[in-house]
Structures are given as structure tokens and as C-alpha cells.
Amino acid sequence: MNRTLKALSSLLAYPTAELQAASGDIGEVLGGDRHIPAHLRDDLQALLTEFAEGDLYDLQERYVLLFDRTRSLSLHLFEHVHGESRDRGQAMINLKAQYERAGLFLSTAELPDFLPLFLEYLATQPLKEACATLSQPAHIFAALAERLRKRRSPYEAVFRMLVVLSTAKPKETDVSALLESPDPDATDLVALDRAWEDEPVQFGPGADAGCKDSLIARVRGALRPAPDMPQSQNPRS
Image (cartoon, rainbow, N blue to C red; front, side, top):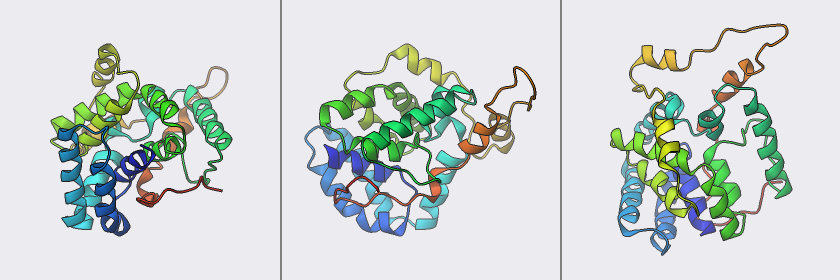
């Protein structure tokens, strides 16, 4: 199971030549996991085939359009929970501290709520604890899967699998609440600008400290290398 979480983490990382080269090894990991339903195993294999055979620049462009330019598909979990509120900063601090207690130390360029990093951390935890932790953002995974389904994106299978692995399944009301938020097409630049529009900066008493979060939120995962697969890694030092 830990290797499966690392495999799913790799599938959500920015496409690189290294990821393409490792696609066969990732497929072996996923193919040997009995927890993966047959239909999802086929769908994940289809995504891996695209990685292995597709043009790298096309794969990277698709990734950027989906996960970097489309706020409703952000791979930063707290984007869907806290948005630009000041609670987001404290949540980042708490999650970073949780990683460090497990021996996983981040570089200054990494945001702790980036989903591939979150999955890499869970891969170091006992199975029961990892699946229970996955349950907390399971409604986010379900909403992202639905949005990707509408786009006919093979990435949908990764999020469906994360829901399968979660101990507690998401409440329909929680998923529906997320799906009510704007979900513009990545090619609609006007709608995208509106979705990413910052709140006016205020100063003095009552000013919202979340204004700088919007800048942090745009430091995307595209610069992160994919975690090595399929070999297990020790937590970073």
C-alpha cells in the first residue's frame, strides 16, 4: 500500500522525462495492488500509457492547464478548504509540523498542502493511519474527480482511487458544496482571471492577512520533481 501511495503521488507530479522512464515500474506497483478495483486499474494504466507514449511537452502543457491554471482543480488541498482566509496560514504551519514529527522536512520552496507531497508523507505512515488521514480530504478528491470526469481527463482515476483508499467515504453534501464553486475552463482567460482575482488589500484593524496567501497559492507544484518510483525512500533530511 505504501508503494501504491507513492505511485499515485508520482502520477500527480509534473510530467518529466524521469516520470516517463519510470511509468513501467509504476504500472507494476499499481497492477500488483489487490486493493485497486479492476476498472480503476485499467484507467490508471491508460494514464500511464499516455505518460509513456505521449509527447512530453504536450503532457506538461496539459498538466499546467489543468492543475496550475484552473483554481478549481488546484492540487493544493487548503485552496479548497480555506481559500484566501487567514486560517490557511495556520493550517500550513500545523501540517508542516506534522511532517517534521514524522521526520519529513520540506525545502523552502515546498508548500505542505501540495497533494503529491501529502501522499508521499502518507506513504511513510502505517496503513491504517494513512487511510484514516486520507478520509479527511476525501470530499476534495471526489469533487476533483467529478470535475476531471466532465473534462474527460484520465487523471480522474487517480482521485477515484484516493477515495477508494479512504477509510470513511465523503459525504455527498460536502462534495456538492465544493462543486458549487466556479469551475472555469482553462482556455477561458477572462473566467480564469475572475476566479484568481484577489480581494482588495486592506490595512489597519480588521485587515485580512490572507492577501499574501494568494501569492503563495500560485507557487505551483510544477517545479517539483516526481518522487522516485518504485523504490521506497526514507523521509527527507
